[in-house]
Length: 71
Image (cartoon, rainbow, N blue to C red; front, side, top):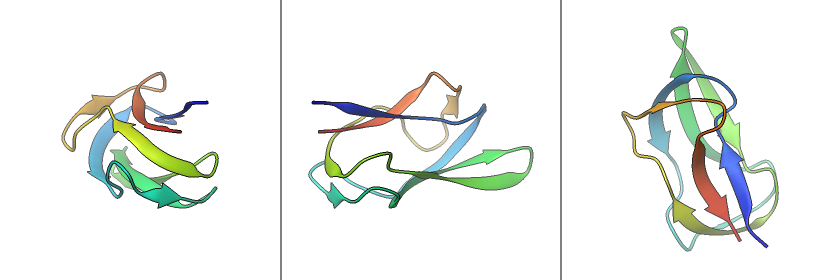
């Protein structure tokens, strides 16, 4: 089962803090975006392995943008 990790709001992706193959636990920080001059951490919604990274630092993301996928 794949679990998408979406951006919570419009912003610029500052960092992706995990790599493909990394094991993450629910609520681990996985990425950071900048929105309205604030840095917002994005947390894993579930435990799993990072299967795919779909966005790169510098990308502008929207709430429907899948930043990465857990499996």
